[in-house]
Image (cartoon, rainbow, N blue to C red; front, side, top):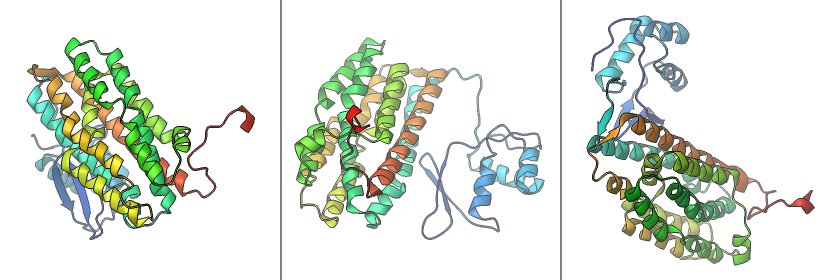
Length: 336
């Protein structure tokens, strides 16, 4: 790409995520690329503050003035990012994106966002036994509601799909997914809840928000919904490993051995069904994707990633509070 040459240049960073490993330094993840950034005087907060102005709306000169970083250093940082291919290189005249290119980029981005979701403090906290056992129970409870929502968002996608082949593909998907929630419910029963408690439980707002967001994507953007299946469906052996990790943690938290076997079987079923391949199947006969559709799909996919963050935040907040009802109850008129 063309490197920045003047102070009026407005750099915009490619979408990335940051993680601070225990060993120090900063891990910057862009698609399937990982960059380890070293400290050279500035602290992490100062660096992240600098990074937020690489948004395509500020010139090099303005970034320098706002952040207090010298013009020469600002230009050097931007140039370094550009040399690594981390600055957006846009083609405003591009109106079609080759299907193979689109699919490859979606795969890279989903891998990046899946990795970022895995860095959420919910997972490290459970692994380190930082939370009370009810938080682990809450994770399985909200997973039940998450799986139970499948028929709602898939049927919404079918109802608003205008492509006959895609509608058929989604209908097959619904037939395979509509009745899988029993696997998570049976796991909860194995953990000590009654069937009645599970059936009458009420999902957290973060879980509702995740479902409603996905339904809205399904309503307005079939391509985006198909792309989202790569983020919320099982991702091969990594997710199988994750399911087995949950089984190990369940026992560590004092729940019965093998209690999550039904839920683990759900993951295995999803892997066999290859639901992460729906997007490839949908685009198999298409040479390209209109750029405006690709942009919309990516934005919706990114929004869903943030819905996962809120979903995880909600589990920690609600199930860590010793005063909250578990499972969560609906509030009816007589509760007022």
